[in-house]
Length: 550
Image 1 (cartoon, one colour):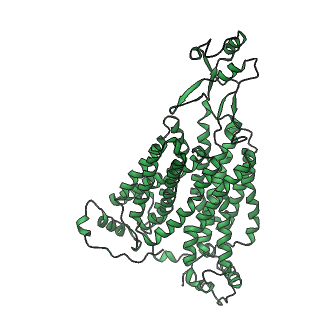
Image 2 (tube, rainbow, N blue to C red):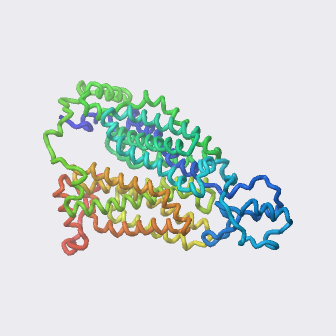
Image 3 (cartoon, rainbow, N blue to C red):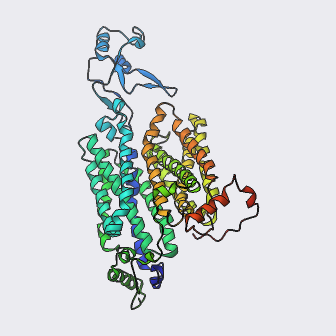
């Protein structure tokens, strides 16, 4: 029998049917962009200090009741303590003046027993100010973001299985509904616990919707259009949503209004049910040939081309059974030394890129510049990152590209601590340079990982690497908390991970212009040929690369 691409070649690659599917699926990814990173504004920490009740205090004592602390070499008011109110009240009533009649360092301090007062210079309210996620409960602030990423981690596991069983289209729209409903419910959370549970399921719906839309597009589209969709179309749709987020947050500065606003666009996608078809490939895999033919004939009518009398001749959903392959699983990734080395190095690179990407993305509200502008710049740099990734895949070797990207990202993050405070724009520029190259590297690792493993292990290897990367994203919010100990510690950790990963990539083989390995033996042969420390003398002759498949 002919394969799917050959059977549907009469449709062409860029007719009206493909254009509608391409742009509608790209548009459906937009809510994922502002949904995932809404935690930047929802969980940001406003300036705060202990609430001072309406007491009969002189203005001098009201100004002095909050102790001064040194944080990262700067003097600022304490966020979690105040001088004992009863003592201050007595001293104020007796007419003593703080700093002149009373040595403030000798006064006893107490916690914020009456709550906190939050600045409204930037936000009217956030989840932090709503539920007092500060001081003793400060750990809850990064855990809120981690809960979202844990939902993404779980969604990564189940989304593929659900769409394989129930179909791409039903899962695509069902997870869009999950994302919309739970985003809306967040706004009415009565407690932090409820909010955390809701944002977990929100993250689960977001990644499941993203994966389902991605698979649906790659299965319906063919040829070069499929490559552009998977490498740039989906990513740019995500970046556009990310860029829209700071505009919405700037207009709606309280967390409840923002939660409602980012949920409403999901309602606009209800009509897409009648415009986006089920994947004919999936229908064929289920033996539903007649339904697949109906969709393809409708596409032919839309494209104004004539379909053959029989589109899928002698189709069998189990053609692959004629070529049985040995059953392999995750254990196969660590059985032999060469495969194990490749897997460990790739997991390190994926982890470093993921924690770097999410760490820098979540940190935008804490940069020297305006958080809304910083977030927009952080989103905007993803556009050239995705375009440059496509060009890199087309023209440049994989291994050298990844090494160059990791080194540039690591060095730029190291340099941030050397920038004086008077040049805050330069610090932002260095961080955005790091964000750009790390985004580029993250996109590049998907095809590079797939090209290194044989067919029998490719999906398993990608799944393991992506899972490890999700662990990095879950840890990113807590990494940012380390700046309380040393302001530049998160940058130093991310920079070190990037540089170490760059040197580790030296021990990976090159895959650019080479046929994909079909067996573990072919993969091991490639490993032994390309190990730079063992067989360097065997490769003094120049290698002629074939034209890239992409």
